Amino acid sequence: MFYSKKLKKFKEIKHCFFSRRGGFSKGMYKSLNCGRGSNDKKKTIQRNLNYVCKKMRINSGHLILMHQTHSNKVQEINKNNFRRTVYSDSIITRMNQIALGVVTADCVPILVFDKKNKIIGCIHAGWKGALTGIIKNTILKMKKFKLRNELYASVGPCIGKKNYEVDNDFFKRFMLKSKKNRRYFSKKNKKKKFFNLRKFVSDKLLEMKVKIDHVNRDTFEETNLFFSYRRSTFLKQKDYGRCISVIRLI
Image 1 (tube, rainbow, N blue to C red):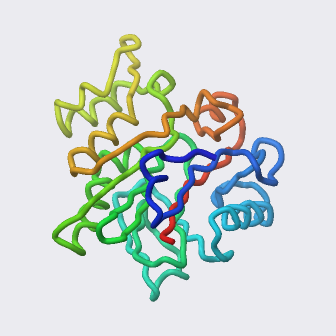
Image 2 (cartoon, helix red, strand yellow):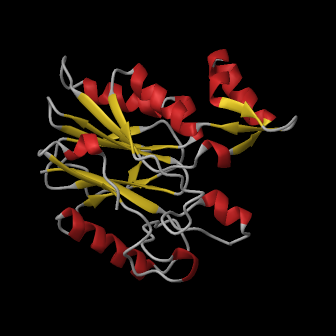
């Protein structure tokens, strides 16, 4: 389990970037696989999620997860919808009897807290969502409640630049959005580049005047600590697990 030094200082919230350790799954999913979209046994996934609930000190069933699609859609969770399936890649809430969770396997989990207005959020930031505005949309939705905010965020474990190899078509997508995006890439050879996803999402948060820190771990490289879609693909595994990151108001 990993924690943000910045978020840990706030008594109003509890948070955790969970590793893949401490759960009940077997084989390629060993052990804390929280990905409902994986082909792991459903009962085992639920057992893992119950473990997370216990660690976060909430009732089972009060952990809100998203059906993630790499979109830029943000949804507020309230008393009218917290039991429904959530189709988005970011969720925010002012409720204190629930926890918000995001599952990842190389993409960036981001946990956000507005100290002044007691609002929390979590973001699933893959390259596609980050490029199309998931971070900006989340912060704007959090800011709509009040004129003044005091926003903090932690950028969690994700794939590191040296392991995020992309092709020229990928690079061109970012260049079409802004020539300034060139700074997030370095050349490997004529056909391949390396992409710094962590730096890209961090800058998006900073542009929105959010104070940030990092749990700077590489999900691809640290095999024993994290699940990784890219690593599983490289190893020709048929599927992969997902780690979970969670935040709640106390």
